[in-house]
Length: 194
Image (cartoon, helix red, strand yellow):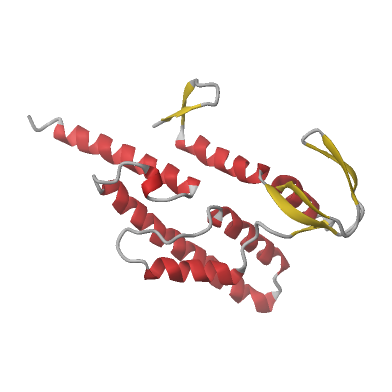
């Protein structure tokens, strides 16, 4: 199964859903986040510009670089992170929305929640592991709730555009994949009915 997408050059290409998901991840990693330098980083070249970054400077860096610097203890990511209370709030919002309506959550909810849980798992001591598992459970439940609504939307003939369902890129890919598979299956069954 492939999706047709149009490049900026106007050329149409076919892309597999897995490739779309990988591209979403790349898109997230290339987006800029605010970072606090915890030590002198010297001169960095970003997008062909040179920046001297000193301890205490707050600068905007691509997420991939911010993660690398943060992992080594040279910087602290200031934004693009989700707090544990936000994840729980989104889960409760999703539970309270009725029908096939998806709650309005951050566009990068899955990526940010994954980063937060990864960070908390590494930093957690024995006493905090229960909290990390509770948050992981909230993320799994949020995924399940939203997936059920997306499946129902894919079954609904009135829903034509993925953007009618969600603004989250991963969910748009899921909706398109499901819609295509379901339509293909229905057409194959209906071919026998003449």
